[in-house]
Length: 244
Ligand code: BTN
Image (cartoon, rainbow, N blue to C red; front, side):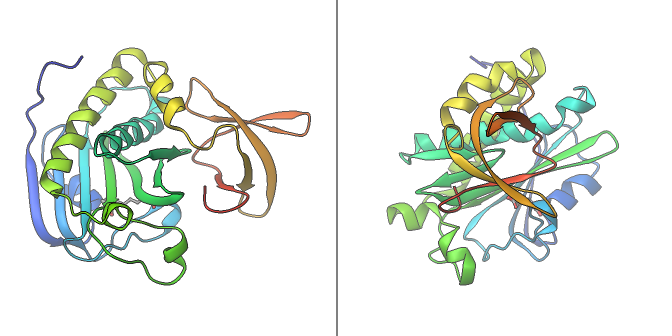
């Protein structure tokens, strides 16, 4: 158990371009947290944007100065996924991790995580849909919020504290024992395993079966007789019947 409470600096603003950018450009110390009510240029994975109406969600970035080897940096995102999924479960939801780091409830995405690295700095950006009531267009089938799933609103401040504490524990484990320290929890919460998936590459896509998570946090798949290991930076996977 992580008994030492980490002292963190918290920077809050009404509006910013992106809390990840704020973290990267700051002179703040390790483990500082950046929060905003609204982002005018919220960044999502694969160059997409992250949209969230003012005050509806959690827009949060944790600034780190990791001493992990470079190959372990992407695993920080997996640690954040474990942390957020645990917190959402504590609040009574059947939350899962869609490999590598989307958090889903009822088959829809409730949280996305984007880790960015520049020199010795890493910003772990967490976007959690909390109290928003609807999603438009194609997001309607893919995205959800804690409010949509439960009809209840949640204190974002409390959730932020819980996420920060869970992240501290997961990050500590990652530093002390590598991803193998988190793998058990990750696998238990990973909804991708045991499923037929579609592997999407820039120029092609194919069906496969998701078998396991490796000690490196990669996805082990089979495609007919062939085994393959997918690295989260290179591919995205979808369920063949929907988003998950
Ligand atoms: C994804 O597309 O799944 C990742 C989304 C990450 C969004 C969060 S919101 C807080 C932080 N600031 C950003 O600009 N992006 C991340």
